[in-house]
Image 1 (cartoon, rainbow, N blue to C red):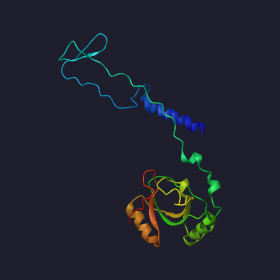
Image 2 (cartoon, rainbow, N blue to C red; image 1 turned 135 degrees about the vertical axis):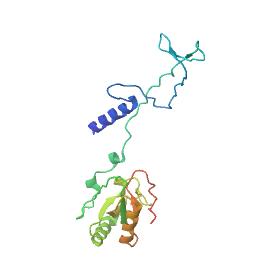
Image 3 (cartoon, one colour; image 1 turned 120 degrees about the vertical axis):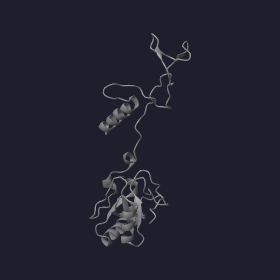
Image 4 (cartoon, rainbow, N blue to C red; image 1 turned 180 degrees about the horizontal axis):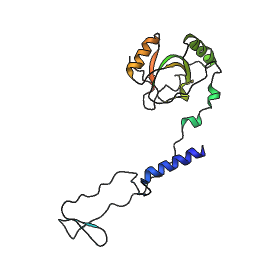
Length: 195
């Protein structure tokens, strides 16, 4: 974990200082300040200040330098979540943690009763060969993270494609109460893909 924090700090530092080919130039962390545009002949004074052609005695000063903001890495949900081995139900099909890459899944069944998780998920997997299961609070934020009672949700699903057409075709093929969801970090968890 220490390496990840160090890498994140270097990347944040590089972004804030605009490192380009070994030359560092501070970059404003706040609002962008525009420099004045001067048209016509321009002369440089001995101190390197730009003089306006319409007012030769007035100097156009650079805006005051802006100090870069200090950024600390945000805590991740994975850091507070239990290890996968603690949430795996110990079934013949292992728990999955799919990537939040924008792909779609067809949700076949959602188990929301803590005392019945293993039985419900095992039955849904047996009825749907090739299906997988995940725990929503250990997956993408585009999935509802807990039931209305505050319990974790185990979802039995099939992998689908990256387009609404592919996902809706797979939802129709599955039938029953199946519905589509996107695996990403932007979609509203309440959203069910309309098919």
